[in-house]
Image 1 (cartoon, chains in turn purple, yellow):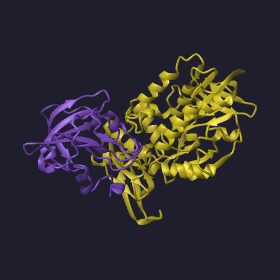
Image 2 (cartoon, helix red, strand yellow; image 1 turned 135 degrees about the vertical axis):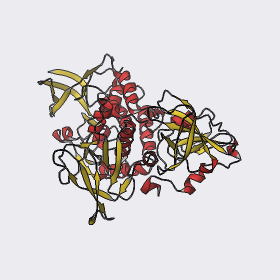
Image 3 (cartoon, one colour; image 1 turned 60 degrees about the horizontal axis):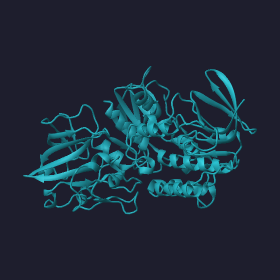
Image 4 (cartoon, helix red, strand yellow; image 1 turned 120 degrees about the horizontal axis):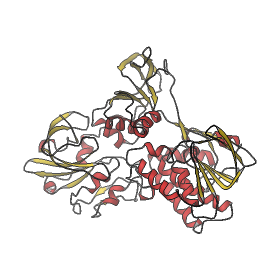
Length: 156
Length: 363
């Protein structure tokens, strides 16, 4: 399905999420499904929490215990395939990469989109960190029920 | 006639890395490019690159160009000649160059050909209407000159170039009407496809362009469904209104200069066309002639850089002024190439290299 449509299956997505108990603390979600020669996620992690077995091409694995959810890998990933997720009071807090101008502003309500580009929920912008890599790190909050569906935001 | 030890033709990632390997060595170098700036296609790439630190991964293409240019510019042994088109290469080691409508002759002991590749096109009715672009032209307008080509674009080709340029168009505020792909699967990296899909860009898989519609400018494109063996299904067509069509259907090695020198070449489909036979120093059948980057087979900038370093090492050895760390560096860059090619995408390159050299490519 990913091959034909660019959309991973629900099972593929779910396999990248730790349990809801684990997500009480923020954790990186490495949505990398294809073995390609690329390792900035692993080399950018200050806590050695991302392992690429052969050093370059294998699919990265998260050492969940070591991950602090800092978000370094989110803006380092050239494929924009990493988010950080945390569950707080029935809400899901996501740190996502964002590369369109103008950037969102704290407090705005944007559309939450799924992996097919469909509008699924409201996303409140909690924080925006501009970055010298020019990929902004945007923190948004959405309802927990969209945990495995939400992937990015679009201006209303 | 101006004489140099080494002339590098092409200032993209391969040529720049070849120059970098020769900088601070006891050889005089001329680096020629027909463009008015160095960097080749890197300067138009606004996305972050894959690879590892050895290929400056996670930097954007234009930033990698800046890094490589800084490494070679103002080196006393490297002269850079820009806006200069190489017109011919001759067996007596003479190169002719056209610059500012004047014709110059240079001579060198060895040449490194790093001319890259040119875009393939697509044949269909009305394919010369204004509004129909190659992906390189769209990138030049948008990323080199800051000009939005049109307010909407339909992309043909889901290889990495088609996917990346589509994303760049979205970043420039252009509506991407869809991506037309003849194969049943996405050609490029899936992460690039996912980036577009999540922003609602439609993919028309197993479709091709039947004709362009419009009188003095493109107004719409008729696409037709393809069967698994790429036959058009005439009863299944769609009209998509669009002011621009971008063609990103692959690249061909620019190997004409090597042809002039009559080096051994082969047509290898997996490598993109007619390519020179190279040894593990990226040396052609003419010992004074080296080649690196896309001219030797279509790959990515990351591999082109590694090949550039190898060609630089090769030239130094050939001129009997080997790099002090020749063996160590050669091994390292071949190892890097092996790593870069160790994926589903690299399999095609490896199959091509096997056909080309008739055995394991690093022998």
